[in-house]
Length: 146
Picture 1 (tube, rainbow, N blue to C red):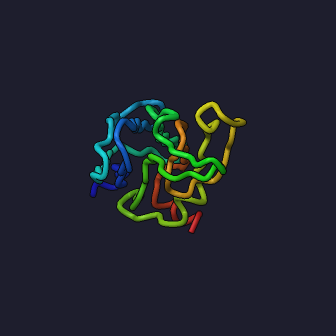
Picture 2 (picture 1 turned 90 degrees about the vertical axis):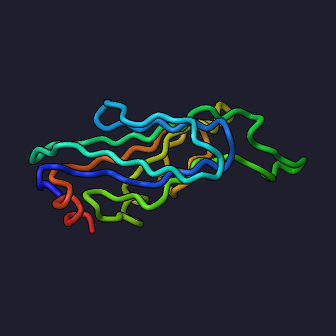
Picture 3 (picture 1 turned 135 degrees about the vertical axis):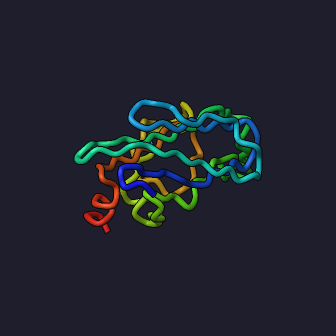
């Protein structure tokens, strides 16, 4: 791969219909799709890096409604729709736990709770955004954070 080019890649899968995933880098959307239920979608994007440049990757889930979650009388979730994010790689290096520890998930429980800013563990269960901030060149950022 060209040393000035960095690649972002991951697999996204919705566990039910109607969930939309929009992905942007530095405010520029490069993927937006209503994900088909149960069908993993490979998301890839290449961009030119510049030394010392700060980047913000944003994954946004939308389209979830109260009808997508089934709850019993005790408040236990019986059925839910989520977007799962797996196999996240930066510069063709899978981040694994580093992706989870460096990503933030912001949401408000689809209007049923307070604004929340929490560590991201791989599943987006509420409309909201996951943010990962990193610097270029990506391989140096990876070395500094592993």
